[in-house]
Amino acid sequence: MLGQSRNHLGMLLFLVVLAGSPAVQAESLSASRIKADHLLEGIDQATWITEGKGKRVIYIFFDPDCPYCHKLYESLSPLVDGHDLQLRWIPVAMLTSTSEGKAAAILQASNPLETFRKNEDDFGLNDSGPGGGITPASAITDKTSLELISNLSLLQEQNLFTVPVVVFRAKDGQGFMFNGAPPDKTLRQLLQYVK
Image 1 (cartoon, rainbow, N blue to C red):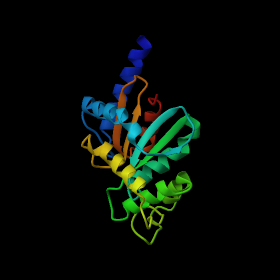
Image 2 (cartoon, rainbow, N blue to C red):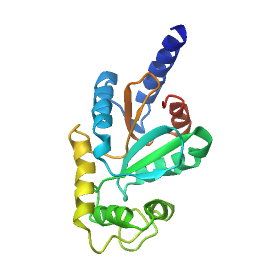
Image 3 (cartoon, rainbow, N blue to C red):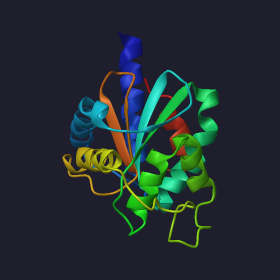
Image 4 (cartoon, rainbow, N blue to C red):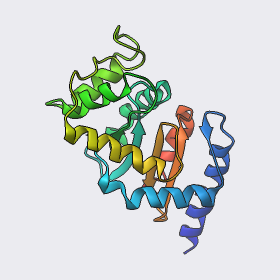
């Protein structure tokens, strides 16, 4: 019981530090946890791209043209193997005129993870629009359109209108989420709380 109290206290202290970070939008802890729990309850309705095979799962809502999502990708991806992580990247289309086409291109690709990585690895290098480095899909299937609508609806149902949004189950069993791309040091500290 004492160990659990220390772990809970450690998480609370970490959240205080995280809330003070200018790179992360923070709201009250209880409101954030309620939203995180609601997101996690409906997460099976989402369509995602899986990176890593770890037992500890983090969900990231991202827009293919989002520079903060790109920064988070650069920070998280190298940590997958060494931290027993599985990242589940959930595409949404909300920022630019090419967001929907790029999100669709990722989901409709024969290898969505490879296409997602190309988008991020070539970020800012595409002449067809801002942000991600892939060409938008020329046609979007009905299935993909419904998947993107469902992904975005999950966020908007919790009054979340920015990306990235990161959500996971913490070791204490409660949902936890944050918006934005925290500094690498803060992000590494955060990983120790993922269940």
